[in-house]
Image (cartoon, rainbow, N blue to C red; front, side, top):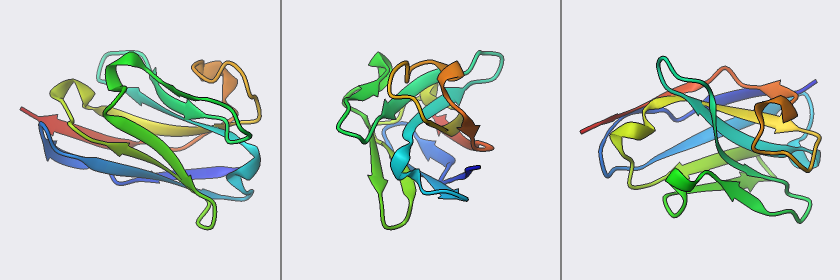
Length: 124
């Protein structure tokens, strides 16, 4: 069993930056692909970024390419989402998730474990 806890959300002005963290407990994240998703009010949860650290590619949704970066600190068993040049449309609750799969990382159904989410609000 893996427990995931997100942190780092908050209120930021458009153009600003935030770094979200996803800390794991229970099992190391080294054997899992990790993803970030977000859900805005009244909308479905959508894919943001994911990576399979077993030498696999990194995936980003088009709207965040060049602005967001997913990374991992093995020593801290923590995954990060660095978000730069934030826009009001990035406002959402952000969730991290872990999957044993190596394919289908853009799909919600691929993931086995989810965090509780952290709110990101970008003001214009």
